Image 1 (cartoon, rainbow, N blue to C red):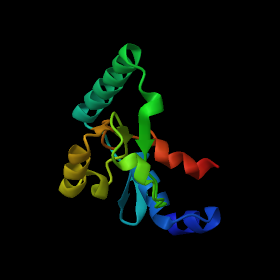
Image 2 (tube, rainbow, N blue to C red; image 1 turned 135 degrees about the horizontal axis):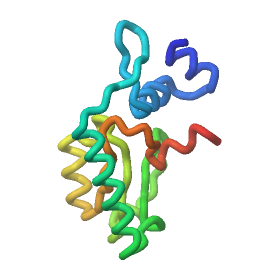
Image 3 (cartoon, one colour; image 1 turned 90 degrees about the vertical axis):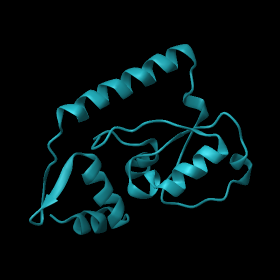
Image 4 (cartoon, rainbow, N blue to C red; image 1 turned 135 degrees about the vertical axis):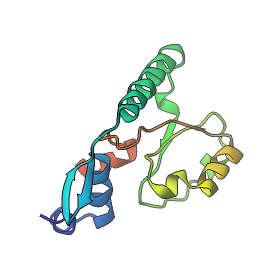
Length: 130
């Protein structure tokens, strides 16, 4: 089954399927999706990021402050200058580009880490299951 066929069956953007397959740890090799092998460093990073987030939430619950993105563009100017924003997104190239990182720093928003090749969904990915 191709990612395009999955997208058509679910009536969602094909790049959404592609991104989820990548996040679930799959890599396309010879036109076949296979599990992406994690390095020891990837595993250590996952544990470290998870522990950091759990400890932080115990000290200062922050889940209600999280803003996350999606493929939909909705203008919400009231959020732009908001202080104390905790922003979460995955490691897609546009999300980790220099321009994006500079803008988020300029806004003073805190960005939560997302482990590389993580099968965990970013909060913005939950629209897939509606």
